[in-house]
Image (cartoon, rainbow, N blue to C red; front, side):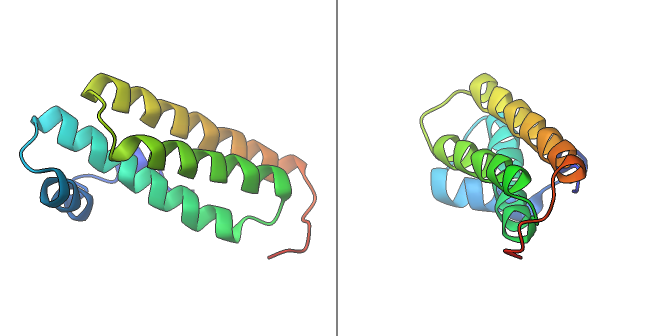
Length: 105
């Protein structure tokens, strides 16, 4: 899986955040753009996951990001959610190694 933190400057995601939410502090725009990218990556990866545990962890990341990215949260809270998504990505990578494919993909 790609490292979302390394996906700078996230111009498409930044543009989407500013278009939909208007002017926000730079830190908040960056955090929301990073979380939006995490949501997109998690959703994409969940559709391609071959095992049920890794798929579930990726869906958890996508749902957590979606619940926060457009909500009334401060930059610090959004950054914490980014950290949670990264932890779920890491757990999904481990699950991928230790679980057997379920044949759904």
